[in-house]
Image (cartoon, rainbow, N blue to C red):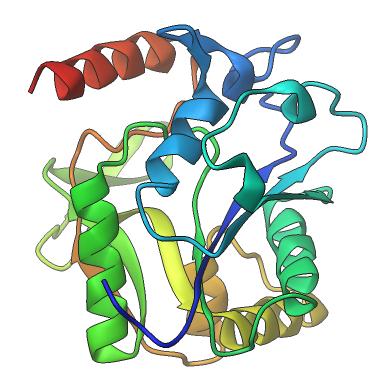
Length: 234
């Protein structure tokens, strides 16, 4: 895929992983003799990236020792207290080596199952429309609004609802400005799109796949193992 702007990736990997385990980090669990993080980086490197920035904890002694694909493209920076702070630190780092109009994909460290086809589809959509974009899937299940004492208040229409995934892609300057402005105004940022929405930057959804799961709990790791094996078999 040819584009004048370079393509960069950011993987925030400084989280504590408290919902996975109090003593283990999910990105360093092993699947098929590779850590989750190595799988994730390998998937991202299926694109023609100019570089990939891993935002890791200052105390992290594991990530620098791993065997990543395309190690010559790998950069490290210190992460922050929250995911959004890690992403911002990586964007600040990138500002020193990339052009402000370059595209930046931000992808969760614990999403090792994203396919190359989905990555290519997302990138092509962003470039052709010149708009920020995210992978997402339509909500399938019936949704219930529950407010008090676990009692259903009402059924919520799912017709216009999508479940956000990553990667999420935007121009470097646009995303950096959006996150900085949101943090300045103490707005809760749960993903890159929410920061872009706050500054009224258009963001389009690109339909992904349901197997692009995020490993959050311990049993998700077993599901990710099955998905990765299935993708190899197919």
